[in-house]
Image (tube, rainbow, N blue to C red; front, side):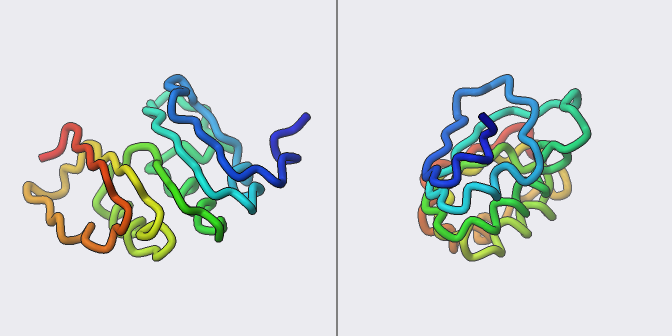
Length: 132
């Protein structure tokens, strides 16, 4: 059975899949009724390059998540650039449903402006790793 056939899926929790290296493109967006999506995988440079939304700075994953109109709770892998963070927090759906945010190796600035997160309505946990 293909995961894409789970069209009524409302919750996908990948929080404890620490060795997760690949999520195929268009898989997450195929769960149009998804309300809860959690993943905390720590992606590394040896992830499969093709057909994988975990590559880069989660840009592909973020694009897929934008199509999920019923999303209420969201936790995503670490964001690794201020540009990606700005794009993420500018999308209204993510402002309303993000519970935890992990920022890793943000080296573009020595100062982090926490005000960029002021519209994150459900943010409960903020992790900084190797920043500054």
